[in-house]
Length: 177
Image (cartoon, rainbow, N blue to C red; front, side, top):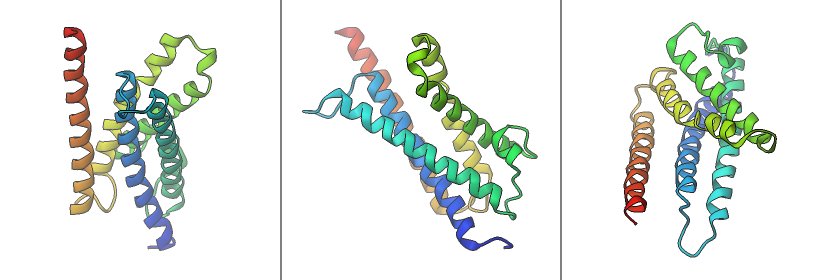
């Protein structure tokens, strides 16, 4: 490796942590939209944890992108990290996921100035961003075939599938009531 080993470790660790936090954020977003909260707590607790997990995910995603650009062995240009024009589909999926997250962040910061329907439509981009991030992690990097990264990916997918099943079954419960 021509770049410092800590940069390489930081790049891969920040990507994994960003994926875990994006999974948590998306799950809490679904829970919040369903007005779910821990027993005995106010709804703002779930909303606040969702917001904080989202912000922390953005920080780790930013670290992941910056370290990917800095690491000469990764061979990721700033343009291909920010725009889905990269040399490979896996990098393009990561850039697309990043762009969707950036759109969610920007529109959330100016939410009071946007019509609610527009903000909500853009916020739904999270549902596309997450699978793009999953596919990016499956196909890109030196750890793609390792048991631990496969386990993290399976855990995230299984968790999210469980949240979706819960949301759909809860919707049926609400419609019946």
